[in-house]
Amino acid sequence: MIGAIADDLTGATDVAAAFQSAGLRVGLFFGGIAASAPTADLDAVVVGLKTRTVPAADAVDASLAAARARRSRAGSPTDPPATSAHGWRTACW
Image (cartoon, rainbow, N blue to C red; front, side, top):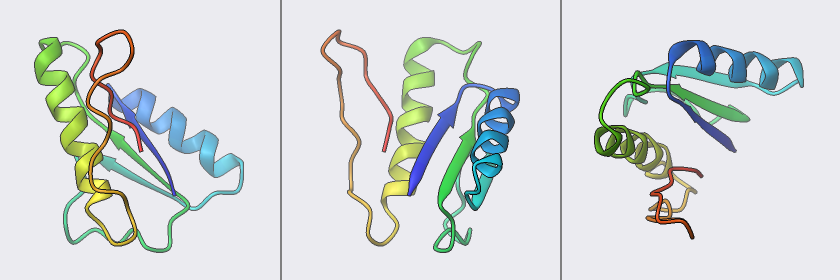
């Protein structure tokens, strides 16, 4: 499954629309993915967060939490990478 985390709602809808235009079944979630949200039949999950204007550490924490929520579902790895080569923490799956 493809996953994307956007720092605002517009970016999330743009990414989701692009995935859908490519023929993917897309789930678009704002603020995070609820534990009860059905995602098993999706090809891509996009999470829109309002993190563009918050302190960087808070944005990283929110992004990592969204990635972990997705990864905690069956068949997903359990933890995103913590840091990149440049010292930036990343949230991708």
